[in-house]
Image (cartoon, rainbow, N blue to C red; front, side):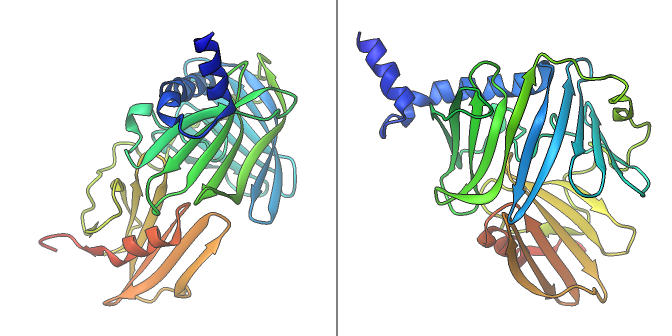
Length: 308
């Protein structure tokens, strides 16, 4: 009887039970990541970014490698295909763009795509009951930040399959206008292999083996947990593109020498924060789905690497 009462309180998500919920939250996280790769599913989802709404269709086929096809149903025709970590973007009227971003296991937007062990201690995970979404019962997984340098997440996970049916970003516990939700989901539906044929591009424009330490520039005072994961050159002497991440959140840093036809300043669009400043003749632009203090601190921390 006591065990049943404890389980009921846990499902109700009453305060003070975060520590007890932690093992269940960890199990839910691991189940979600397995479901994203190992299940066949298809469906229709709505993506909200600020005031913009977009309807998308997704097809996923498990296998080795697993494959995704994400298709826009509104506006200009766009298809994104994925085979393993290789991704191809095809926009109507434009040449396909192929890349290999390395650690990518789903095309579903906003889904944190890291192993449980890679989560920085700045986040905590709890599990509670969730609402019905797309006529399916859910449990709500909450990812809460311990500081002001990152957003939180709410993930409504399908109780039957473990798949995320809705993902929402939060700031100080309040929802941001950045989320997706399924309006229709079919688990076990076999995706059309012909439609997914484009998910295996032959070439790639980036490599997961790129050096993590920038050659010219570094970030000397990044927020806790953020580290440079990728450094790319754009062919212009002295210019670089750095990508920092804490395991969930990613921030891009562009350092460009010479005149740059971009306005300076700080701003927010939906969940995207950005800052663009000039330091000793170099334009530093930082942007990512993180709060403004994060991009500002990173921008103020960009400096030449030792010996440069």
